[in-house]
Image (cartoon, rainbow, N blue to C red):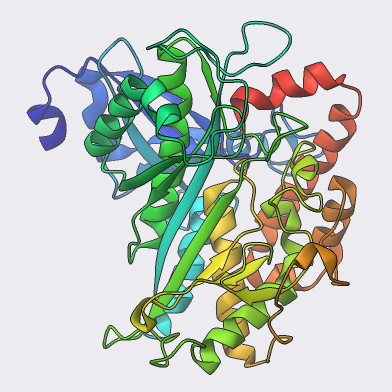
Length: 443
């Protein structure tokens, strides 16, 4: 109760877990009863972490009628309370994850999937050091046609792209000031902000940290924060993969290195190329990508982003200091040698994305295979193996490719397949406007 004791202004609590679609599922609890959450947790049906994007039950799910829609127990993560400064009422969010009554982790909880991968690193005396880069759009969605919001300072709408433009950042200065203040209060390590290539598009980078679970927590909470704070300011914020057909989509790039027990970066060979272990990790990432595309591109709109020449990788290749490649090894001091994974869209589940990226890299290290030679030049102009091009193809590959079983638990795989097959059918019946309405606020 120490955090609540130190924050007497908090009026209510949201007890929240992350479902497979990265939606926040939970309960509102009066402050005076919050101690029960800390001491005993709370209960949701297992099926709540396996709803479709609308929040509907999954037909034929073994979690619903076959088991009587049984409850799991949800306990606080080690994150503890975080404020929710986008709400008018002073409120705290308490992140939870799900267990069986006997203490076993619930395999359908995406946070447990990542925790299992981290445990595999720990068993080998290794620690992944992770950072994410999150792109999003600020959008005026008050009319049928989406537009960049007017600047609160000038009242003007910028009609063109503003890559790394200070005036675009300054135009929304109050929003970004409140956003950084909120990140500080929520212990989200938000670093640099830039304006990106799209209309009203921005990117904020997170600091590297040796705690992959916290990195995923940060990314998930950051998305909740940005969307909520934007609405407080009278516009929308969206991480959907492709809100505008003629502008760049939103990506979520991941940078990671790996430390051994002595704290040495196992990708650092003292030079520019990196170690053999770096190449083995890259081989694993490339080999696992076709099976993993449903994680990196989980929605119908995701595949609108993955087209040649649109600043999103479509070919399976790696390179040094080349942003057209799916896997990039950035330049810089050898001690900071790392891998940048550039495939995932902004609409992903951060826990599942990091579980698959880190899991594939570790599998590559274990297999000790060599990747193809690094490319040079424009990856879009090369004849490369391609990622799955459609949502249906990604679902089929996720179901059939044995790689995915090395990365995720069987129960979660089956739950996600049922979810995405149901969504594939239902989304096909929507108009373009209805799809936009569905994804703009949810992902």
